[in-house]
Image 1 (tube, rainbow, N blue to C red):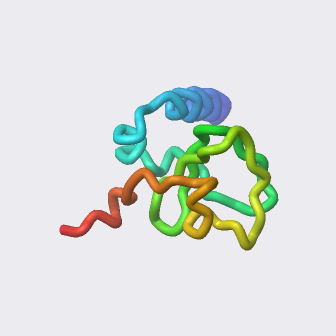
Image 2: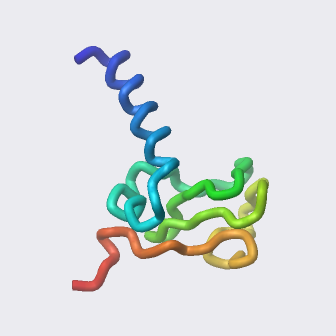
Image 3: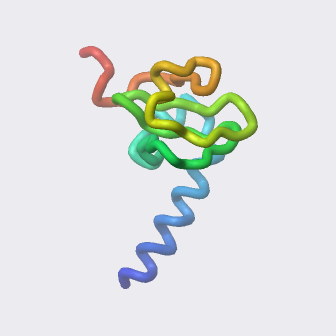
Length: 88
């Protein structure tokens, strides 16, 4: 497989991941980007932060360094533990 083909397939996989139910998204948490400040997010978009997967609640949000998902429950809802964080 060529590198170009691999990039196209990855883009398709990431697009398909957006439509996963939250429970299924937890099985592929690595498909979602890490949260970062200075980024525009849209309603329903999921990000990883601090070992958890979060979903944005409002329509849009421009992230700020001091408004991380773990301290802004009006903006982000934690949808579960990342697979490597589940207690054994």
